[in-house]
Image 1 (tube, rainbow, N blue to C red):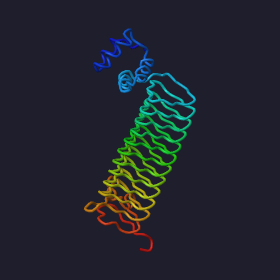
Image 2: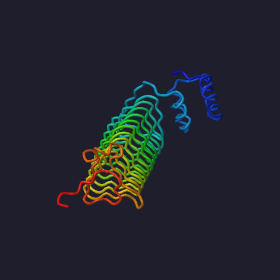
Image 3: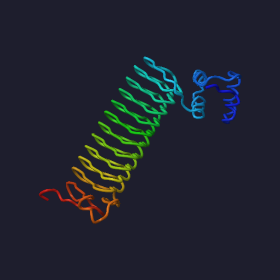
Image 4: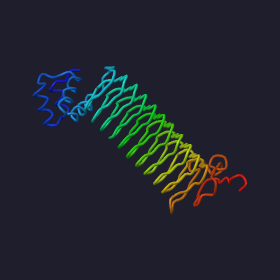
Length: 290
């Protein structure tokens, strides 16, 4: 792609960035060489702005390992070894790493992210497509995943977490602020959320659920241990805990919000070791022998 000065000017660049472009590329430049030149002189934000304007390419780059201060690549990237980037790693297409990834600030991928080891982003992680990490996924700030999220071990997110597809995690999930999942949420370990947790479908957690604010699922909620929330607990269908169910002081517990009252016994049962306080809807199933 040939980028001319007229082409850049039509995108309303900042004055300083356009002056730099005119000093160094008065006759224009190909897309990726221009991105590389911007990154080389520390103008990483300008390179990211340029990608925002012109989008990804179909180019594919394969390397044995990647170590750099910053990388902005418009195509897809396959790295056979480790990735270690001090500040920003931005890929326009997909990113496949056959070892681990460490990024000192922000990691952004325009399509899918697949990693055979750990993913560590000390800033934010934004992936437009699916995310698959065979080991741990550790994000210092915000996580945005547009597709499915599949992680073999633990997930830790410092602030908010939004997932556009199915979520399957083999270990624990810890989120510092709000968690929103637009499909099913399945966690083999424990779920701990510093804000509210909401699923557009169901929530299934093998260990306990601990949410600082509200807990809500359009389908059912299942926990192998206790369910504890600082606010209300709302399930569109059934609600089950291996131990206790506890809402915040002054808040209620609701099951069957999305099914008729006439079918609550079959589709909106509530099961726990003991009757929860302030259970305002749903069909309570007493434990065997109670």
